[in-house]
Length: 245
Image (tube, rainbow, N blue to C red; front, side, top):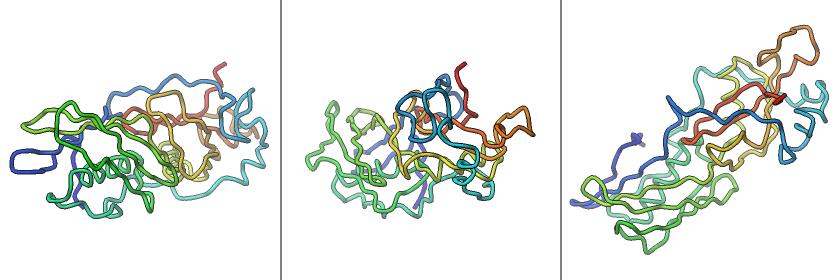
């Protein structure tokens, strides 16, 4: 399956094309929101009102950590795991749905088995029309607006991303790569829907001997909590937890 550059166009007819215009990429310019103290909505057993891991001891956290080698690069989607791309002669809704699935999977750096997207049957290449496509991904059902716009000699569809899925395995490997740690655990479901560009994700992660602990011999420094941000373009930003004090 060939990779589609972010500004690529999919040919629909000899005189028209379908363009998927992506949201602003996080690479090279996005800044995460300022770190904040955990709230009541933080994942269970990890971040009570006073700070992270108040309800779990270091020993309990150590028992949750999963040890894997530090990857050589950040997680990336396996393009071959996508379903076959529809032919140019396939109905417009099928082609738009495939593109939505492909792009959300790229943003999540993972193709969730059994994922599929569906767009309205009566989609038309008429500028100004707005539709809503539904994506089932990792047990979540998410809705994405699709706006028809003029551009490049044809009508293209621009997707909006009110939320994006994040995958626990991807987040954990991202922390491993970003911070050079092997033992990591994220207190979250296997797949979580997060609003991109908002405050930090509603969960915390933990790593053994990671972060910027200043006292190496201190038991409290053995396991470092991490906070995660999903930037506008879907890129993950991970940092040692800041208490906000």
